[in-house]
Image (cartoon, rainbow, N blue to C red; front, side, top):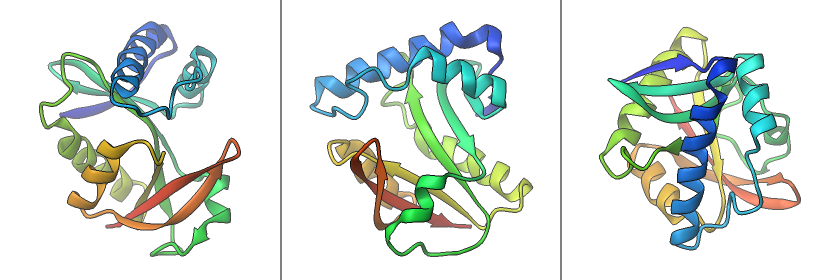
Length: 163
């Protein structure tokens, strides 16, 4: 697997992946993206800011945003494992054709490489309480629950992986 930046001309591809992931989430009761998040405008902004990425395995199979700082993480209700530089992952989604095929661990391995290149000492991520799949996968990959972050007036479960 490889990660590559999403281009502003590829927003339709990102949007399709997000829509497929949203439908899947709703099918098992995960309402994290039920209200139109992430929007087309946000995906466009991701591409313009250079934080939108595609996961590629022959073809584009997934989408995510990778940031070097997230202000919401300054207000953790809990304690981060590290105080150093980190990368944060948002909007992780796989399309229908790639879901359930074990690509998430490979995605995290690629993010680890990118984080090392950026001099980060950890990877941070948050998820909704209704996202049972992420709550299951993250600890299996070494992420530790660290507390709660507030996003759009909702407490999200925060995790960190030390590199």
